[in-house]
Image (tube, rainbow, N blue to C red; front, side):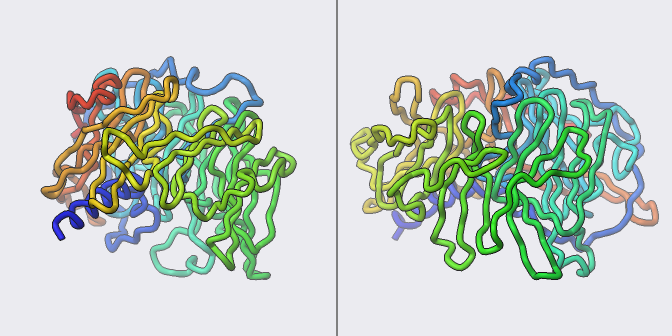
Length: 447
């Protein structure tokens, strides 16, 4: 029984890596009032990220993902070569944009204004993230995408049905806001792609309350965010999600609403579907995890320890990576735990008969597999240290949670202090991570 419990903890730690941010997507808060700006705060340093423009393709044709392939909900923040942007929530479901600076090892608010807090004039402030909000970076611009809530919930007290996209320079200046009606809902389990220059692409749900229809549509947003252009629309009997890119095409999943086990993988351009049924005879419902990297889709299947490879551009299945004899561990099942990082896959290998699990990395340049043994204590249990963002030399990893006191103001201006739980992100050099050396670099947090 103890072995089974231990194995369950390993499974839960993997699920935690993949889903611990989902709770913020639709939470409602009892505290929902206007509060005054805080009076004592130090100005944040100006953020200059000269390498950011080099993190995206210069070609206007090549596409790449700006958020996690597994969806906007799985995106930790906006990644650059030297840092990562994220959101720091207040109890009333507003938030400040914060920046983890890898060079100075500081976590700062994205504002040079000493009057920080619930102030619409602050370059860091997001008035509402109800429905969910995430950051991503395109060249020298930062975006915050805030989801709306379905029109059926628009009349519920405290809900915010309006979808928004915020656009700003990396230091928070030059902010623009575009609002979209309650008939537009961003598909939180699909991602956002870009062409490296002036356009954003995603699949949204278009709600028609008159016809009681919800259709998935591939849409394009220009950098000025003035409206959107529908490029392709599906019938209302399926749900589509953007899950990757390959060269100048998008990769999407199409799932039947009447039978969610029926999912098809397709490639699509800005004008038309290029290829249906990408994986051929492979049953998509058997796929348990995946990632797309450099034109190759890596995926795992039920009751299999192998990592399968499919060349999207050439429509051919490649030789699979076998893990069933890895270090005498004899795994019976394999899961890809995150996207490719530093040209490495990260795998969770499970031996279900022995109730055991372990992590390993695969160097995609050499196809060599190696153990990963970085764990942190959380609630008395060992939890795998997963990668959440990648810089030029470092990874941003999570080693648990911590609490710190925060100051705020009530509706009448009365100050109060409360304790807030934070994800405990630290830096680690890439070579230390791959060699399982826990040489963590901690951030100094703003007051």
